[in-house]
Length: 298
Image (cartoon, rainbow, N blue to C red):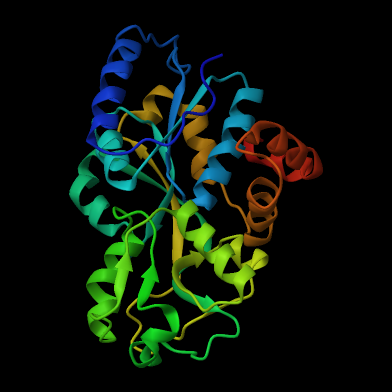
């Protein structure tokens, strides 16, 4: 069995390394009749996007139980789409449409296949502590000092950061505030510190996310609708995936996960004591939801 989880990597260097590794792997791949390619399934996972991490580890466990080998590779958003279009990756399970990742599908769309949405309740948010003195993005500029003059962001390559920087900041006159380019774990660390210290904080966030269960938060109203409407989370594959792994392609295309189940899995993975060793946590969660999990491959 090949490596289950690679640590977070970022940048074009990852794509180059993945291309070298997978060229050697793909070069020896052979299809047995109408069956799957004789190589691992390569699933790419966005750094810090917890719903995608949860879904990817769930499918890793499900597919391995069905006899497939699976590799998960963590990277930032931009290199993942570039690698997926080149065939270095087979799947990404965390594409947000029609807004957040639309630019990437427009850029690489001819080399990608949208397998459909598995959750329809996703939304981008700007959140503050529940007892913050404001309720709307329209009030943020006038109260910037209450939040240290900054909005704590996540990975700079993410659609959320692009939309926040390009749309929300100018739209609500927030140019005097600093949009901090960070990472999702670093943002969550700042959120925890502010919560523990009783301090105000404003962060870029999204639903579904376990932080809404872990911290007392409220979303700032977005009267101009600059963060967009609710979105859907899609699975997107390389152009050759259906031919190489037809059975898995059909399972992923049929995949649906209600938000309540997703929150449950995220809570188990990220709001406990897994310390990054997700496999036993996923196995326990699967055992508690066995009937639903069995339906993923039936």
